Image 1 (cartoon, one colour):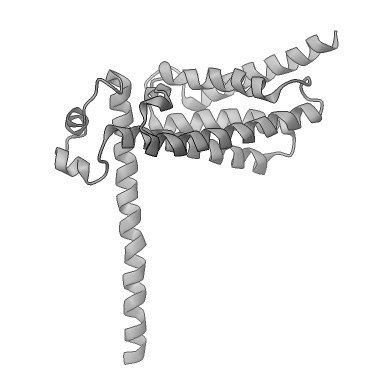
Image 2 (cartoon, helix red, strand yellow):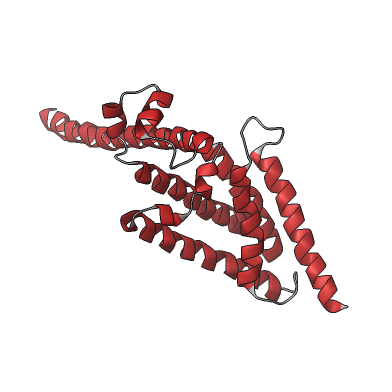
Length: 218
């Protein structure tokens, strides 16, 4: 019986460690979301950490437990967006084998996820050049990774004959430019949900790409 008790104690302690880490990360992610909204209201360069702490109803020392600089918050907000993109791609591939439908689902899911995660996410419009190299370099790597994945999705749709042949780089620049611009005007209390916007944008993009294909045939 003593041996059984001695085995269980480390197991309970080990289980508590990830729980504490998960709780910290949950609080940190919530802080990043609220800070991103504060940046959206006043602008990244016009908002201080003191103002963020005040908006969150915490002291500056308490804020420092989770983030040290504004740049870290911007980095984390952009990371949330790239994570949302990766999740949207994964969901699209799991839901359909049709390349064009995968592209549609990606657009819908990405817009839905990023608006629900960050709410008013105007901070994402802040260029990566606002970040110091230790934050900018990994974000640029994520940008290249996402761009390659989207180009592959577009190329697959071209190979399947769903859209006209062309340069996948330009196609991605076309629809991601429109999607990224949502950050400049979207608000959670607006008339449309993120998913409704995603469905509408996906329709615009697919209709435009199909239209380009028909125009190329004439």
